[in-house]
Length: 63
Image (cartoon, rainbow, N blue to C red; front, side):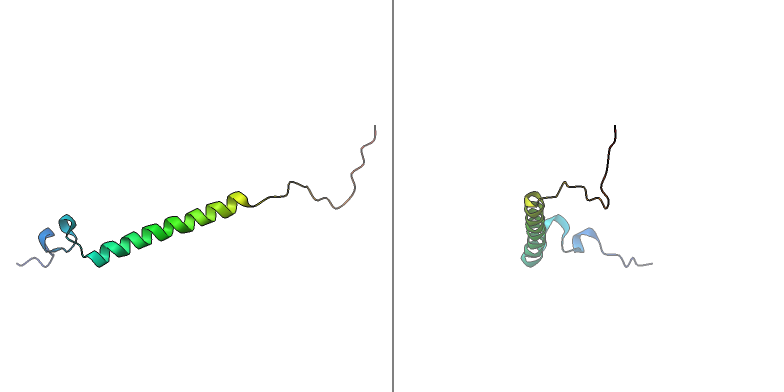
């Protein structure tokens, strides 16, 4: 009975033999993810949040 699964030596990426185009695509994906994360982090760090508590009716404290 013949095995239909490829051996490790037949796989393109085994022992770093992947194509240059595939490596470039992986680097582009990684760097674009880091860039988007950095931009998001900068925007969140520079945004201001109001600390005011909005109430509907006036609060009266009697002693």
